[in-house]
Image (cartoon, rainbow, N blue to C red):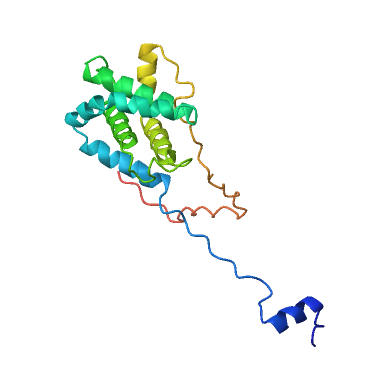
Length: 197
């Protein structure tokens, strides 16, 4: 049995065009947040005290760059200032109770921020600092315990400084109770063992 040819179907037949455009598969982004997390952890393992000295030498330039983007990204501006303060206090010996992992994460994030030619070059308007903001969010998320410890010790608020805690997106489904009858218990053996005297 043939279907009736509609005007639209006839138009597509005459023009030689398919009725629907093929759907293009969406490619995943080249870089994911876990790639940046791996970068941060790898660089933390390689960071030396000389690298922290380099951060302190560039502190004025870093603060100036953060001030330039303060209107566009106020949260990142606060994170940059906090990270610089924490690294400066660590180098002066004023924060001995803060984990070195926290100091290393702040140092790596600051060095990443100071480099204008990173994954997304900083000179691209609108999106140039997006990767820097992501690196700071991830660094502050990974260093949450050390940052909370420092803020508690100094009496500072973490409001607007730390990223929100993420809840797991997947939950384990519970199995419904089985409706099968329980397995029968093994019957006692008919023969009793003779008792020893």
